[in-house]
Length: 217
Image (tube, rainbow, N blue to C red; front, side):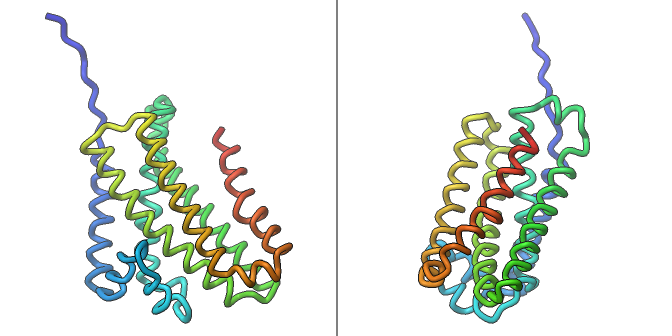
């Protein structure tokens, strides 16, 4: 009888992080029950934006709690991509997840800061803040989907190239739909400032991701 060696990689660190995300969800629901309920209905209704999107601050504790979940879960998913497409990097770099997490956090914060600066330069703070609030809310919701996906890939179905690409593609499509919805909602303003909108789209919505892609490929 031939025996084959079975290598099982420890996912304890991911378990602790996902457990931490679950605790954050519980705290968010406990301290902001009505807000959490409205947020959970985000794909079905715009009530969350009508109630909280106008005068609310981006740095509200509820937003920051879910933003932390977004960073953790997106970074875990990117780590799984490395695990499938570049396993040698995972084996040789024990700090890979921390590097991914730090890079994603810095990328988002720098991009956010640039958008705020542009809004201030063109005196469009109210409009851009509303847009950023919508974008943050949608991506925090996608963070919950990443949380569910990570649970599935880590503990139910071992990830492979096809499943990760399919899942990532679906979430990217949902993100694009959310952006298009925001653009549609501000359609009149965009049409009256179409040139500046194209500059914004190229400089702050497209080029950062191209630069990020080129940095890893």
